Image (cartoon, rainbow, N blue to C red; front, top):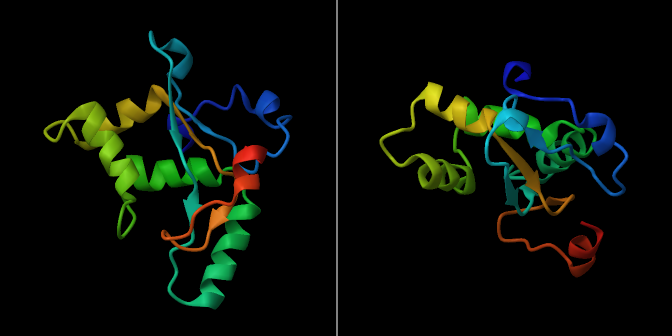
Length: 137
């Protein structure tokens, strides 16, 4: 993950109130001609078992790099069993279907930022954030 990430903003980001997870900042973001910040909605716990879901939510809430880890694993490496449709659609939108090789994905994510607006974990993909979550974000 580190080879694709710029941690140069971390000191400033860590001072942001209500920021549960640090956003992804690609290693070439500051060098990019156009600054692109992709804003997602939220993270989801997708375990079918309630006990595992609780464990997964706790792990996410206790890891400031959780969003970054998700981008690295799901968007760059595509190593998840099922990649989130949002990340797949972002890739297709920005690269097209024919430009989705490993090097192209890595280059894309090295040049952009990614932030999940809602800073809490949704229990399932059917759950919606509560109003205060939008306000806090």
